[in-house]
Length: 254
Image 1: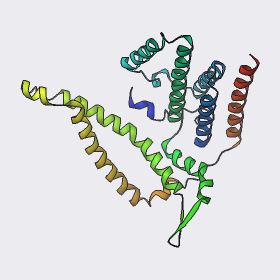
Image 2: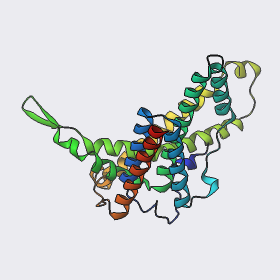
Image 3: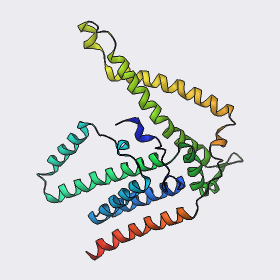
Image 4: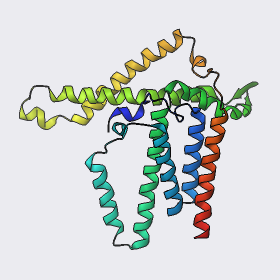
């Protein structure tokens, strides 16, 4: 899969104009409901909802990730393992696989339609009630560092595409190295070499990013964007709630 799956696709659509917190709440609600109500009807309604969001976002087909062959091979092996157990085991396995793809695609939709700069303010706003929770230790009042956690999550999401791109470059550069002796080829470990180089590059980038954040006023600037949900966000959350209720209702009736 390419690193583009973790980046925003700049398209002007109603989905792109939604608040980042609305998309996170919707994905969380669907995932929790599927976790406790993994019926075929609920999975079908969830897939239909994701397809509708995809169409509304007007995303090009080129953004769809292409999974490597070993992913499909692993799914096939899992199905073959559950096949002798019985139809019920195969049915549950299929639901788990589809549940995983629904969560993965929902996460991709958030990444494709949300600028990374809006993630930290949205997380800080959603987790703002946790700031009231605190404890006293040695006469000092401590509170949950909500803003710091939001910044860490946002920077992690922002750094993943860069890390994947660095690993791709390191892998390509390693293939261009001249061929060594047979003894050196037998003793080397390509995975360890790439991971070690990636860790070194990540450490360097983390230091540079920390210096840049400090120069621009600290992490508080990352969570201080004045953005709040509007009317379209309320409509979107209502539609998601209706789809969830409809999926559960149809499953109970049928």
